[in-house]
Length: 343
Image 1 (cartoon, rainbow, N blue to C red):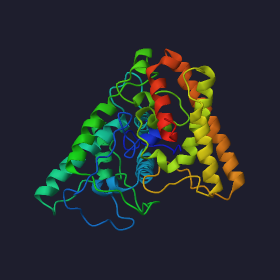
Image 2: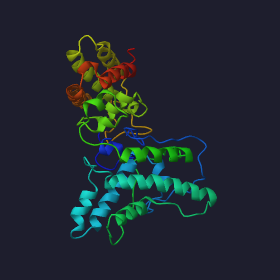
Image 3: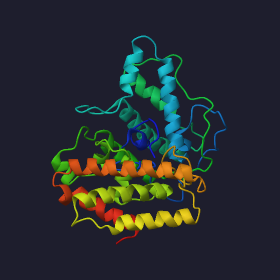
Image 4: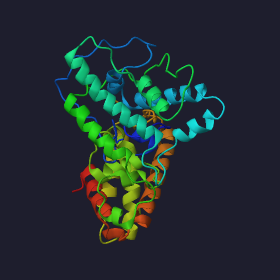
């Protein structure tokens, strides 16, 4: 479920902050606030290869396509950098470091959120007004940080992997996301303290430990399963392994029915030849849909998911200040039971 690299919130998966996300995004990474009716009226969908991309359309793409677009934009920036700019650009794109107020990518994320609101306000007054563009925002942030790149980096001939688009973001949703982004980009980094792990103010702690699957862990902590449902077989296997590990450490506190229920459901899915993954809607990563008849592939994937669940359970347990009685552990146990229907 881990895709490779990009930015803060919208691209939480990449920096391991979601989803969950714009798909991810929460206080672990803020989520998109999408309700009908959309506002304001939308422009025509851009033609294939049109550049730069307008923010309103960027927001409608699936999370993986957003990530891919920003990755290509970052590559364009790297290609345009020369001399001593190369090392500075590479530093600019690094994750937020402990003690740093806001990273370069955090500045970009925040600027996108601000430009989104202004764009909506402007087009509401004048539907023919030029729309704000993602590439222009990146250029503006780079200039503010002393980068003058020639030619200006843009993404050309971008191809979406997913044809279906998400609902438009409303003005209320854009304003809420701006608030969430402001809080997120200034989040703490580094290993969480015992106090933070006992009673976290939000779910960002899941991005600050070296979990194999931080997005699954975030979903188990928040209880928001909207997006991980698309990878239900993977999450069931992961939960079964995590519960087995924690039950071995907390025999009087963890319910073995969670593992049993997860195994039963996955067994039924196999007997019914259901796909091992369901990447429709808002896919969480590059993990392809599994062929239910490919037994060799299923066994290999199950072993990987089991290993991930065990590793993440061990990381969770080792960092939990009061072990089985720690607040995050208790909450995750409760939400695992809810996910598999064992409560």
